[in-house]
Length: 219
Image (cartoon, rainbow, N blue to C red; front, top):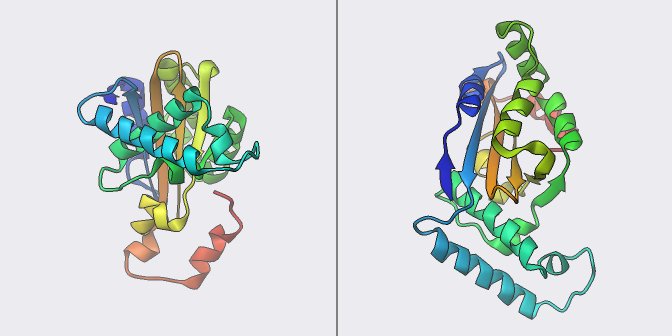
């Protein structure tokens, strides 16, 4: 996986970096990668492929909704491997299992992403509009992603692990999400990760009420 530099993404990254909204701070990053293997990626890719095949060999579950059924096609396995390799580049200190990671990936649509974004980034969007002559943050994000990976041709995935496998939550974030926009034809993927950290916790203050705000949210 080779990191790709794109100016439209850099402008958004400047905005998402340590965005202080009073009681909380948003941290986010957009990164583009070519799916061409480089360096240790080839060895890791082979290891992930063997892990998946070993899992399939031991699985007798033929339920169409099971992970094993999804992973039967080589195309699906390659997609999962690209996504896991991207995770390795994003979080080099973590050891991701392809089979376990698969359980946390969900195929999404732009509409479902938009709904999530509008919910979690409402205040951030207002901040962007006020500082960018009334323009829309979501529209700016769409244009940037479209320029890099052609959204109409993309598969969209969310990665929502449990608390034990979430790098952001381990660092004390209140919520976090990771989205991946994968263009199979271009062999290119853009990761978009955001996390929210309570400034009260960061300042050494902790109130039980803070967590209640997010209890009803489905990340």
